[in-house]
Image (cartoon, rainbow, N blue to C red; front, side, top):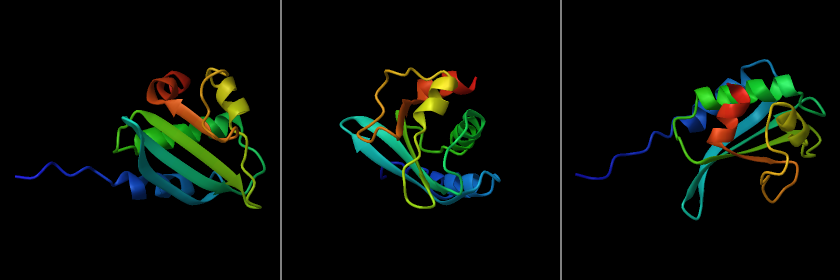
Length: 123
């Protein structure tokens, strides 16, 4: 008997939810990575807008949370404009209650959030 297989349906569910939510998101993707012993859910998308409001970020996080079959320890989220520039998500995240001094990943405009932090921001 082999090890149980992981539910990788998040790889289809999260992008479909983001692209179908009417938020102007396209080319969405979701993948799994590890950082030491930390399991990371990586999510990205392209936005037709030049920025992401706190209400839009809340909806994005809700959709990711609802379709996350991976579980994991951390969420890394990146949104780019249609011109390819990274959109700074931190101001909206701080408005939603994220700790402004928390680790945000190697790219300052990307969000790197623990699931506990995501839960605090949404509930």
